[in-house]
Image (cartoon, rainbow, N blue to C red; front, top):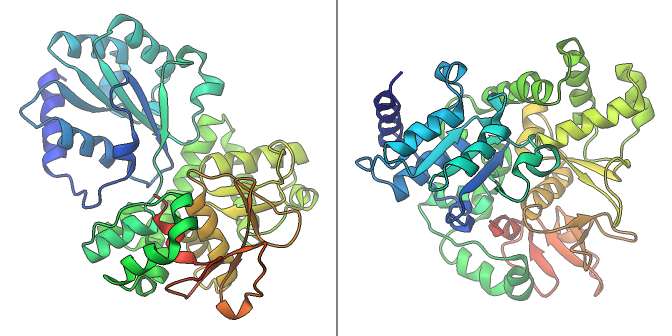
Length: 395
């Protein structure tokens, strides 16, 4: 396969890219750095993100930028470092590398490129399970790592309504939530779209108009069968136990963990069960909630699904709206804020400072001056009562 063939593929993919929603991460990345990693779970749009970068910053006539997918069999005989060197000699300045975790010596090759091809920028995308800092000393201090997440409620709304709402920081929402909410509901009715989002709006492939639930189930299986087992070197004979663990957890979350019972049910040690649950968290299938000062390998106080869409994929008749609301709040807040268990009343301690109680009904709010409330099914809040949907504008 010649370099020209890679450029033809690049041009075709960029020309046929359907990317109707501008992702906030595109503005947050410092593109001046030479080595940039984009991590994310399956389905969040990493490939489209790389191609959108090429389209936005490098027109098709500009052969200084090239997208390559390491699934290509060409890279079984030619190393990534050799390819990057040839691309650079042909005038290449930016190499966009997809599926980095499918390439055996990816961290060593990236380090070689960094050392030997100083005027080449590499932007690489891979699974959320890879650990740049902990497991790849070759890249320590060299690679900037960013997380690409699924659509926020804001990004979903922008697509569904043709709007261009901006994101707000947590502090901005805390200080001005009434004015912010008023400015949004003057243009649209966000609650009219909220249930659609929590059901099928997180993963961008909902835009493909296929059977979303079936596609999501397929994606979950691929995460378990390929990403987790391969990157965590789990023998395939243990895959059924990993799947059973996911199913057992899905019956109970959000809840605390009974590790001893799970250990008995899947017939594996407590330590193995905790490791498996951690792998599922790294794959963005679950989130952990700890008290302040604690972290893995200690048992979390509570386990949540990574996003609300996963709940419906594994139980299409799910009807616990309180669980949906808490999961949504965690999913949206998790990007730039620290969430812990509260030591008293409430659901979450945010940034070590704010006690938040998430409610699915305004009638359940027993207002306390020491508590903030994120409440479903209200368009506007008042003082320490904030609409739950508004936290979907954090990114």
